[in-house]
Length: 273
Image (cartoon, rainbow, N blue to C red; front, side):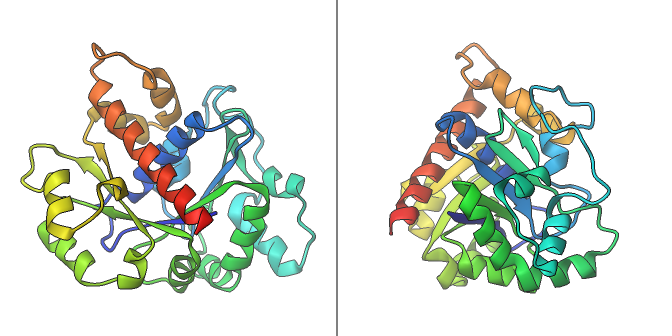
């Protein structure tokens, strides 16, 4: 199952934090046998790894503590380039793993040679994702809003595209006037959602004729934002996963868990279409 997370604007739609949140909540709600693999098709200082862990994260959160000179997606792409035989064990050796080896992250690297990375991604991204599909139930890709050739390829091949929105009328109008091919297989997600905005979830559903089952929201929440910034997203979500109504994060968790449930239903539907 190939899922691309994407937005038509850079830096405003919370693509990375939305993907990180949904991947963790989906993992926590799935069976122990299911595995999710997450990655980016671009190199950035603000990446999934920054949200998921810190270098000193606890052992039970991030089990793979070893660092190789070259690891992650860059190493996997180089192996693909060389025609190496990539077993399940070899693939997961390049990944960081979390939550009892149920969530895996293939870091894209530090951005020292972005042009070479994009060259390899454009050439081998589809083969690589298909390989990962053999070993994971879901492969979630954070695709750059920048006009990268690899992004176009991934979006075309994705079974489901999570279009990340923000509560800006110009941005919404642009999305729903364009990208008809993506909208045919879209699930929508609003990050940093503000219930006080005129553009509420209900208003967006009505204005742009979106099925309610295809739009989730992850509300604005300072503790969540701090957890993402500090590499403490997993401990934050674990701590609050089943919190009660007296917890200050209850409304956030209720909405985020509902978004993850709607996402999973959309993914399951796409899987069988």
